[in-house]
Length: 268
Image 1: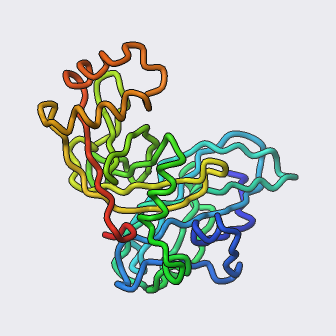
Image 2 (image 1 turned 90 degrees about the vertical axis):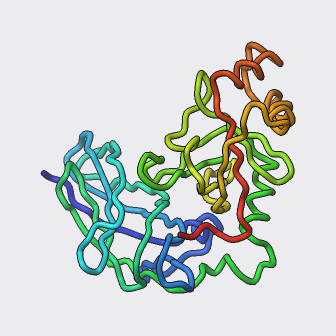
């Protein structure tokens, strides 16, 4: 296979979105002062050159002992030819580590390893998490006021496979409400989850703004809260053909999930 990795850059996603560059030779991610747990989302920018065509790419994170602690789904990428260098950037969410020892990021194309680079795991909070006087939850609240979509990651078996997926939502008393099932949106494992991660992105640049853990519970159709939330959801549901009558349909075929953001950034 004639594909060659020409460069990799790993950096905290929030710093990247704010235009703060980490040194090219200090590719590091942040795991917080516990020294293990969920790594703060990070960006991976990588460049390839090779024969023009369509390829399947995947990324994996290896623990110091060589165990795979995270692997991305395969994604399609297209290279323009061996005289060109093509660059791709993605945000990585949901990596969980057991130590702050150096890990490795492995790049695979069509199932073959094309490169691996060391990735420092820092047992400290990201620079953006302190000193501003604004918590991640506060940032999330502001983002929710301006957007019609929030991303939800459901961890564990039967969840969203380490990915955050977009959903439409409503808010009431500081909580986020998501309707799933039936002819509405579907989010793997959300109706059964007890905890999820809420991710807000910049509406303009789709870059990471906040990531906050939230508790999850189902609101029963007979709960008086259901009617209050439904009155919030109806005007936020785009292209709603049955209007106010949609509430009866939702009670019969959907599940209403209440997500209560925590006051701390998402951790394991």
